[in-house]
Image 1 (cartoon, rainbow, N blue to C red):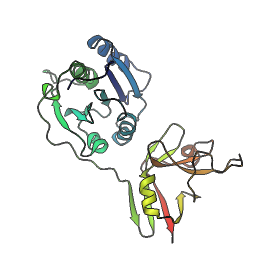
Image 2: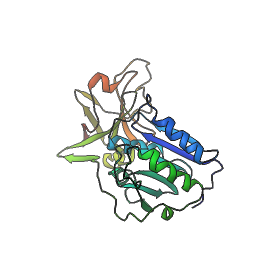
Image 3: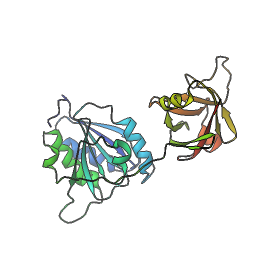
Length: 262
């Protein structure tokens, strides 16, 4: 499918960090292979091999791009390597559970990218993804890149579970401010709530209202724990003007307890 974008665009989501040469190698290759390419850095500071957190970043950081965009995801890379089409965009990554976590049943087509003849693929983004991205941006179809990959590795990420009178909601992401994004959307919360009062327990802290921003109330004083709705549509926990993660040690996959009051 030929991209309709005036500027060919590739995004990078990786666990490379900012200190090495990896991003430079990949960007140089892309600029050499595709005239006028725009390379967008989504994130290079993901924890090494953390597929769960990478899936959160890809889901909320990549899917808003125009059709025809090519997204390269190099986190916990291992064979098999795949090229996917989702919502008219392309994703180059490992079939390590990330595609199923991010896209569910939305994958329109998947093909397997063949490794080099010598079997070496220590830097998949450079050796495999750059040539594949160039071909896609020049009008190749997925079927031109490799054979069909009929079954993606299925992996699930628990969002929330009911435990008696409580819902245990899992932390899906902790951002650079120390705020925690929960595995329950605001829509899901309201469907369960049905207008009832509630309390959300986070370690020794409790919050019982939804704030429209990171500042609960209008007094201007620091009021502590805040429950709000993130730009992703999920419930988000923050500590006003400070890091919730640093102050109270909240971590990825940790559970917080929600209770509705009848």
